Image (cartoon, rainbow over all chains, first blue to last red):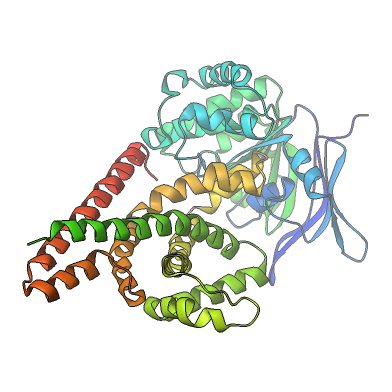
Length: 254
Length: 213
């Protein structure tokens, strides 16, 4: 059996005295779309950020597509892969942030081609047509010469998705991609993510959009208090949550 | 009444000192700022001490020290002619101020920019060169303009090394001809120089105004 795209085992994360993640284990297979839901402060975003090394874990183990990013020994000493390996492994994952984090001094097109040019060393003639194709897919080809400040929140987030896809990642991580958007703008972003799901992109989506999670995710993970409370196929979890904390959370959301 | 000739000559000296000091102090200041924000605590601390020293003592004292006292310092002691001594003093002093301007600019860039660059696979030098510094450059233009204009006027301090800059030339004529007219003309010359700089910086700011943020 092929190894899972994401394999996290017993991940702990402490910020000073606060234990934000208390032994989170999750495996995501190729082509799977997993949504992580849960109250704010439950550690969802921190877990996502640990996966691509934006945060370093306190103990546990993370493998990405069969390669070990970090693992800790029994006595709790973390061994990280060498820096160059970390960069190479993490490049297989694209990430989309809640606050977009587009580069404001670059145009839409320049945002998309920056990493392929600088990191992969691709030539302009190669990457520009591909970037234009990505922008066409997210419906923003006509805005390629605009600066991020001239776009709406939904448009910014779609550019951010195109920018992440330009590196041809195997996995996409979404950290509350619609939480900073006006309600009427969330649809266009969710539509783009749904299209990626239809193309069988492996995705991990931290979200507050329950309808979206139910419809697009193959599996839904409910996190609370730094641990996974319940992880089941989306339909089952929403129809009949097993754990009282999941039930209480879902009732609150509706 | 010969005023304009000597004053133009003095302006030449002033401009030379200004241009050379500026061209050297800006990159040195940027380099100091990059060391200051780096994760190398020891050299960062050294730079911090350097900035404290340079901002904490009068520029005139520094200039006098480099010209008169440096030759007697063991090992690094070297006797500099007046012009290089003045340049060294201005560069060392202004680099400290520029470093603080650049540091403030670098630290004003949102953490999300670094994170976005990192998840796209850019390493630290690439992140600084391609993402952070271009944005810093736009943000620091107003304080940079301020400091640059101050440098033009501070060049008049070289009179303590008996160099004939614009102000000293004006004072010479005032004492020779018993007229205060040269002061007015010198003021006009300074105003003209700072006007050109102000316009140049305004042009740069407009050029970078195509994006917000």
